Image (cartoon, rainbow, N blue to C red; front, side, top):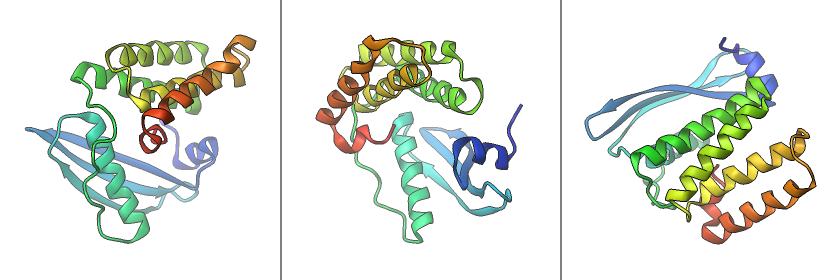
Length: 178
């Protein structure tokens, strides 16, 4: 069941939530988003953006730039320059599925199965795109959560640092965007 804004804000320890929808539109996406105050459920700001790309990571970057600009009260930022290798459609889908699973882990499940599936998806992405800093960062986060929740032993303690180090070497800005 969907969480109420206040419940989601409490679980994420966040005062604001971002919600939205999308529509695939020819060679791109039409995206609508709203920034919601968690405690009241009140919409603080929102907008729509058209992104002329089917690469889902590029779409995500463009949406993030729009939201950031609206929050800062400035004009939209220049379109983001690609900071990560572009992923094939099926690989991008696996990457986004991994992000969604990890979000579910944080918000609802705390399930080892979600972490295992997230790890498997990210490893599939990295098999296709070994120089993808965001996937490497995500894998580092998964390893941290294994340790944090007692799912892994001492052997897992070094894995997060190795993933983060590889990601940072490839692109410090992109690796921070997990």
